[in-house]
Image (cartoon, rainbow over all chains, first blue to last red; front, side, top):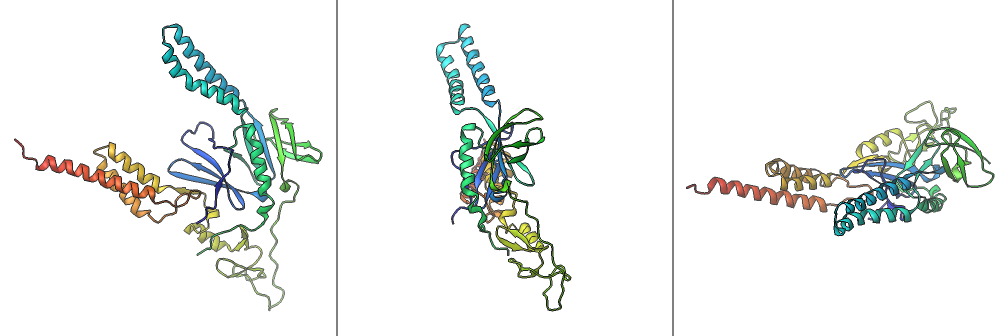
Length: 158
Length: 195
């Protein structure tokens, strides 16, 4: 059986706030976007029909700066520990993951929050969380909106 | 074009003169947040308002099943009853009456109306795995995992990944092996000749 929903490629997954255990992802349906919040044992769904989307609003956040400062501070702290006798091997083992985090954060670009507005509500999207990926979502929505006026497929009611 | 927008952070409504652009940057007058906006066709479209049901004027007019004084405008795609404009609910290109919507949601037949699902396969697998490590609790956890797997064998799985019985099978196997293992230990302790 063909799947009804497909993950939107290249926009990643997201979380809302500090809910580490909850993963959220955007899926493309035949005539709507599906936001899935997965807790591991339950899934919650929100649907936004393409034809109802009025605008996509993107708000740049300070997430990249905060993550850069946090990872940079940890790296400095580990280097500082070397002054008190921590061997270079330990410094490398502890510092490399944070260095990777620091570099990846810099390369991925500034962070943002995306909101979709319809006539009745404004919904925060779990992804994309980086400004670089916003055009991907916008291009996807533009490609879906004309075709969404066609009737979707629905299962029969018993 | 003057665009009426709402800041998602502080909920301040404001207007922006964006010309004919479909993409523009603005600053919220309430919280000074930098906002980038992409407009879509629905932005300029008037909000759709449902048609009012027409009253019966002639005795030959078919009436709505739920409102006998109103003219029937459609046939419900779910139950085949004649319904007026007021009762007709457009759902992904189908016209359904409120009763079909209600029963469809209750029975889980209309996936478009589902807003949550429980992943019984993940629960069964977790119980089976916890049973391995929590020896005494395995007496409860392993049978619980087997019960959940059997009870929810035919339930729909995830809406996005589809139904998968793999986790159920693994949960039943792990739970059975755990039960047999602990039953064996108990049997050895009971029946082993004590010196």
